[in-house]
Image 1 (tube, rainbow, N blue to C red):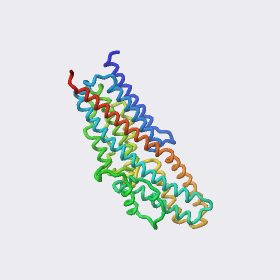
Image 2: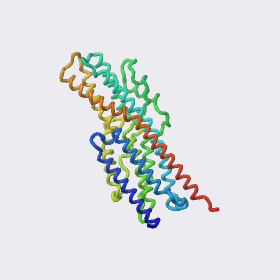
Image 3: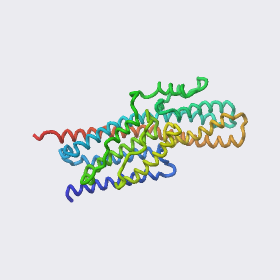
Image 4: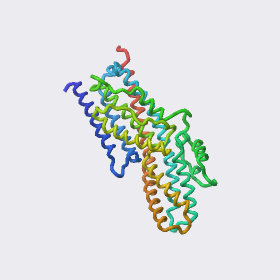
Length: 358
């Protein structure tokens, strides 16, 4: 087999692997729901596997001068530019995990207060305060600073009462410091700009995996921004065109449509993220706040039983978050460092390819 035939075979195999990986992501098992913490781990694994295979196809055993010629002298710098933007998103999302952890800490207070037998008025009152803060944290507009860094001070009850303005101001004071005009939605839009599928002979050559990896990187960053609260997501794009005839596109387009539908619902509800655990937590919190609002000892037996079931479910969600959030933050950092390394290697290839022959 000659070099060109091997290259075409490698490209075809890469695209098959992309298709298989995203097909698996689009049909998660029952305990691994779309946009759950565990599903995001799988998404990041898919990115890392695809990126490693892509880099092997494009760089390994290749004459650098080939990648300094058209169309690669344009495609590779564009890919590198998108990679730099992806690094910003990784930073924002990794810090956004702190706001999810903040919600988790508030849910821990609710669990501690309501997981009592017998349940007293004081327990219900303490739980109600935590629930008010939890719902406020979940329903702040993105631009109001939901990317909180949780501290004990932010979820203790030394103050009387709680309102949205107080929480928003407190979140801003604790938030990750970025430029005020930085927008995760605009960052995603800029990554999508000028993304065009290769045509003609380029569609079966090396430009093809470059396009594929661009789409994968954009999709992964877009899904992370949709799931995890981070700065200024208003106007997050819900669609970017991918040609349906590509053999790997069907499963990715299906995932994109599912997430886009959820995002449209989210924008109407004003929730802080599509993370599955957050959405379930929000529903349970709504139910429990109704319970605590009307509770008087000893309480209606049927309502107490229903609240206990909700607390049990909340405890299960807390456990999944407790096990998964810190590893998720580390996983995002791993993706960050992989992108940095890949960018460095591509810059090195471009430099060698453009160097004059001595």
